[in-house]
Length: 305
Image (cartoon, rainbow, N blue to C red; front, side):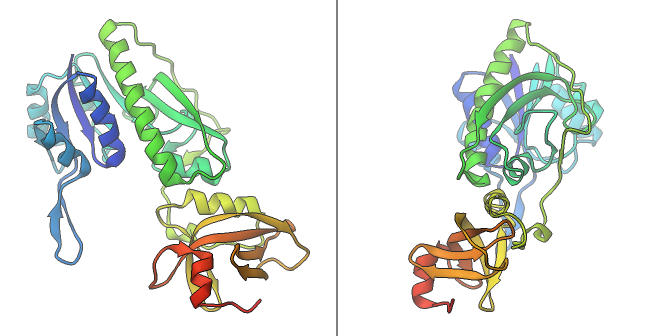
């Protein structure tokens, strides 16, 4: 089968790499246009473009997939299957109709739970203990297509969103290869999604989600810390200094008021929470500083308890 791949970030690279290593005929890779970055505003290629060029895969970077010339270019590639993984743009129906067999998408949740932009983060923010990847047939509505297959995996109790992202990317690549084999054999299943109020939409993250509210339960704050890595990160202010919090765990019980600093030393900074427990911050980054262990920070910035 002739495959066209569409993706942009590192998550997509892991999927494309496994497709290539499995021996599928990848005719082209579509990815977002290069974007200017850093002070010099130098154009930087996407991770998918960088990888595809190392494999001598032709790369296309259209500004819009709704342009008829772009659609004609894609039709000329005569794909049997288009595989999409974190491409970053909604695809028009005219594009969905191009492949001879199917256009499938690698989505990092167990659909229909967590349709939308940030499924990995919301699974951790909500304290879920399991997630996975879904291979779905693409439809015009976002993440609403029929399900081809699902791969499940537990979420580690200390695993953050960046760590889970890397694991799900690898799982997504394996799932995409399995889906291609099923499509090639002509026996790929197709299960319609039934979406209802019991499922949550995984909306985009924002900086408004960052501040730690000490009136909340300690475990909820741990989940907030884990779920907002690497962006926008959980934040708090201690002794007039703003911290990004990267690692924390539930600490001992306390009867002190929420927000009270209980201890600050080699084990980290313990703060009282709203459920009578404490949150122990063990890794942080102060404004203008580097990410480091809380104990190391305290050696240069002691806090009076």
